[in-house]
Image 1 (spheres, one colour):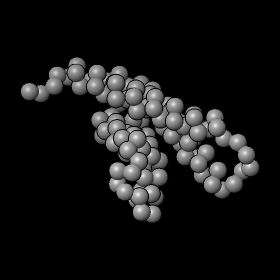
Image 2 (cartoon, one colour):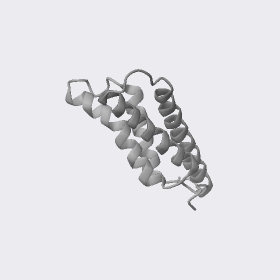
Image 3 (cartoon, rainbow, N blue to C red):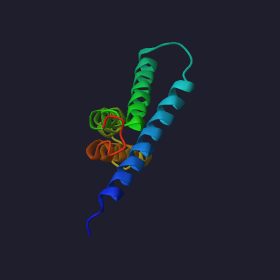
Length: 118
C-alpha cells in the first residue's frame, strides 16, 4: 500500500523539523560552551559547530534542503569516519550515527511541500 501524498508531505515536514532542530541545538551547545585560548583544534571544532548550526537553520526553514542536508551529512560524518579510521567500532557512537542517517534521509527526501523554497 503506497503512502498518500499528504502523508508523505507530513513525514518530510516532521523529518525536516527534527533534523534541523537537532542540528541547531547541537551546534549551539558547542558554541555556547566555547571558551579558552584559540587553537587550531578549537577553531576546527567551532567551525564544524557553526556549519552544523547554519545547515540546521536552513533545513528548518526548508531552503536548499538536499544541498544543505548533504553538507550536514558531511559535517556529521567526518567525526565518525575519523573514529573508524583510528580503530573505533562501527557502532561505537550510536547517537552520531543516528544523526548521520536521519540527516541523509532528509537530504534524499528534500524539503517537501511546505519548504520555503517552493
